[in-house]
Image 1 (cartoon, rainbow, N blue to C red):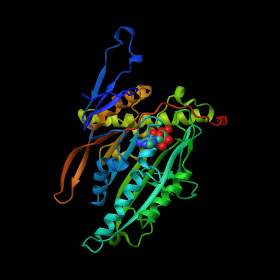
Image 2: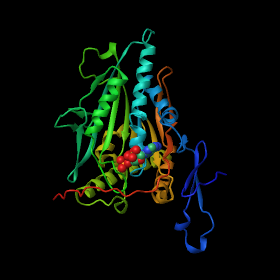
Image 3: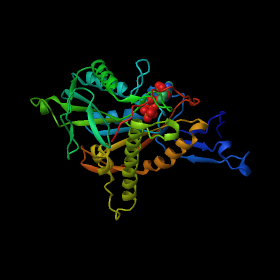
Image 4: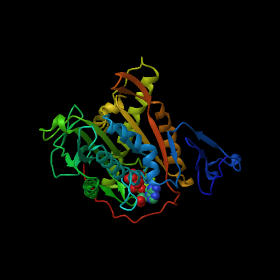
Length: 369
Ligand SMILES: Nc1ncnc2c1ncn2[C@@H]1O[C@H](COP(=O)(O)OP(=O)(O)OP(=O)(O)O)[C@@H](O)[C@H]1O
C-alpha cells in the first residue's frame, strides 16, 4: 500500500494503477476518520509527478512515433481539466522540452540513421493550427501562416492550411515555437496561461520517390498531436463575458469528444448498436473522425492534478476516461495483410501537487452576440 502524502488525493499504486481517496473534508460527518478509496487500473502507463518529460515520451509517445516512421498514421490527444499540465506535457519549455520537440528530435535522428541504408529517403511536412470559438461558432486559424479562410472539408482535410517542409529538428522546433506565440491563451483564475483553443500539430512523412513532384503531397503517414483546451468550471476560472463564451465552447468540445469515445466503446461492446455520429457536433471531432470511428491508432494522455483541492476534477476525469482503454482500433500489418484489433493506449500523467493560486487577470472585454 502506498503512503499518501498530505494534501494529495491520488497516488500511483503500480505501473498501471492509481488510488483515488476522497478528501476527509468531502466525507459526510459520520464517515470522517475513515478512508474511501477507489482504484483505477489498466492504464498503459502511470507517470507519477517526479517523471521527466523524457519518461513520458519514452512510455507514451515513442511507440506512436515508431509506428509513424514505419508508415502508419496515429494520433495523440492530451486531455484533462484546465491547468492540469496538457500544454506542458505536449510542448514543454525550452529547458524542459515536451512531446512535440522530443518527437521531432526522434524523427530526424531516425531519418539520419536511415540515410545510407536501403530505405528511400523521406520528406517531412508540418502543419499547426487551432480551432477556436468565434461568437457562437468555431473557426480554424493557421498558426504557421496568415491564411484567412481555412475550411474543414468532408474528407477531414483543411483547405488552405499551410504544410511547411521541415528538414531538421531545430528548424521544426522554432517553427512550432513561433506557432505557439500565435496560439490563443489567456489568464483565468485556474491557469495564468490557459489555452483558449484546441491546438493541433500534424507531421507528415512522404517517401521522396512517391510524390516528389507535387508541392502539396497528400500521401504518406501522418502523426497528429492535439493539445485540447481543458474543461473548466465557471466557479474555478472566474470567467465572465467573452471568456465565458470561450469556456462554453471549450466545455462543449470536450463533451463532444468524450461522447464520441463513449459511443465508439458502446458500439464496440455491442455491434448491433449503431455508432452514433456525435462527431458531427464539433470541428475537432469532425477533423479526427477516422480515429473516433476506430480506424486508426489513437493514444490518450489523461493529465491530472493529484491535490485534494483537485479531487472533483480528477475524479470526474478518471471515471469518464478510464473506460476508454477498452476502445479498440483496427491495425493492418502490411507485411502479412492481416487486420487485427488493438487496444487504445491510455496513460495517466500526474502533475506535481501545488496549492491552487489566484492570479490577477485583466477584465475580459464584453462582447455582444
Ligand atoms: N509537470 C510539470 N512540471 C512543471 N510545471 C508544470 C507541470 N505541469 C504543468 N506545469 C505548470 O502548470 C501550469 C498549468 O499547466 P498547463 O498550462 O500545461 O495546463 P493545461 O492543462 O494545458 O491548462 P489549460 O487547459 O488551461 O490550457 C503551467 O504554468 C505549467 O508550466
